[in-house]
Amino acid sequence: MKRILLLVCLSFLLMGCGIGSPTKINATKPKTPEMPPPYKLAKEDIIGNRWDAAINKLDITIKDFPSGEYAYKSRILKSIVFMAKEKAYDSESWAYINGAKAALLDEDKKRLLEKAKNSQKQWAKYAYLLDSEMKLIIKNYDNQKVSFDLNKYNILPSDEVYRKYDWLSRFGTAEDYEMEQVLSDYINNSFGSHLLYSMGYDKETLKDVLVKGEINYPAYFYLTGKRLYRYDSKTEPTGKSLLKKVLELTQNDKYNRNRLETESLLKDK
Image 1 (cartoon, rainbow, N blue to C red):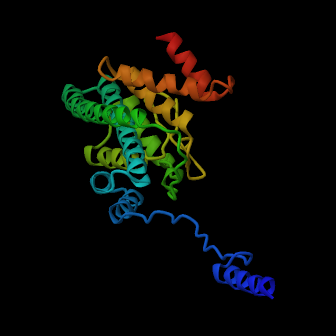
Image 2 (cartoon, helix red, strand yellow; image 1 turned 180 degrees about the horizontal axis):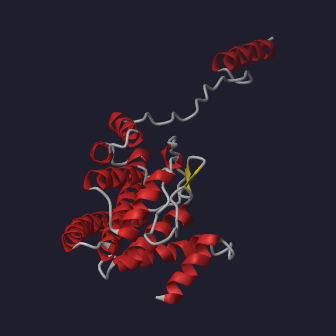
C-alpha cells in the first residue's frame, strides 16, 4: 500500500513540474533594425539628386545612430557621393582647360581658365572629403554584407550631355548657361555615371560598386583607392591602404578584374 501511495505522489509531483511533457518555446527571429528617419530622408534626397541635403541627413544618422547598421551604410553612401562629385569636378576642370586651349579669343581662354580653377577647388574639396571618409571605413571594415534598396546607380548621363561636354573640350565654345546645365546634369547623374575624360571616351563606372543592391567590396575599394592614390601625396597613403585591401580580399581569386587592375596600378606608379 505504501508503495502504491508513493507512486501516486511521485506521479503528481512529475505532473506538477511538467517533467515528461513538451515545453513550448516561443522562438522569435531577431528583428530587422528599423530604418532611422534621417536615413530614409537621405535616400529620398539621393533619388531626387539633392546631394548636399543627403549628406546632411546621413551625418545626422551617423551621429544619432552610431552603433547600428545604418551608420555603416551611411558612411558608404557618403563616400560614394563624394567620389561621384570628385570625379565629376575632375572631368569638369579638364573640360574647361582643354576648352581654353582650343578657344580662339583671349577673353574666352581667360574665362574658361577661371572656371577651371573654380572646378579644381571643388575637385580638391571632395577628394579630401573622400579621403577622410575612407579612412574611417577602412578602419572599421568588417566585411559585413549591407544592402541598399537604391537604383539610382542605374542612371547614366544622356548622349546629349556627352556631346556638349565633348564639344567644349574640343572647340572651346559653349554658352555659359548651357554648359552650367550640362555640368549640372553630369554631376547629378554621377552617382552611377560613367566618367567622361575630355578628348575621348575613356570611361570607368561606379555601377559595379552596388551589385543587386549589395556592396561589392573589391570594386568599391579599387575605385575609391585609385582616385585617392593618384590625387596627391596627402591622399596617397589612404589610397594605397584601400588598394592593399583589394589584394587581400581577392587573394583566392587571382584573375579578379579589380585585383588585376590594382596590381597594374601599384606596379606602374
